[in-house]
Image (cartoon, rainbow, N blue to C red; front, side, top):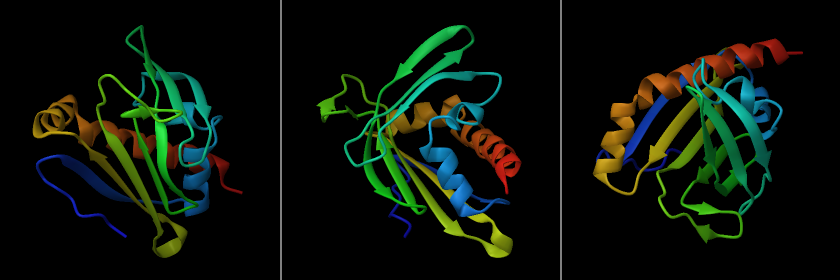
Length: 158
């Protein structure tokens, strides 16, 4: 179910991926897969720590132009093969983050031909943060991630 979107604080896009929903879910929920798609190339993910449960951690470390970026987050909702919601507003143990950026909502549904309808939503605390994320290239960046995810998952197809 698509949540109500607020154009002042939310960014989103939907794409059909030519891989089954079960593979998209596996890629998003198993740490060995995250480095293969999670940030737009040539940037890389150098570490991943996942505890896939509400309140569990979703921590990543990125290398962006030689700079390490430590991202700590927590899962807010986990519905197998349908929805993942995670945020950097809290870390494991519900510890508030000093400078939260967004909450991500990933929605997965079956698409015709065995593919996946993939919706990514980024919710922000205020319009300024939303605008900043849009200016940083939300649509291009998350679109690239979706393209990388699809290509990687195709290689996993059994």
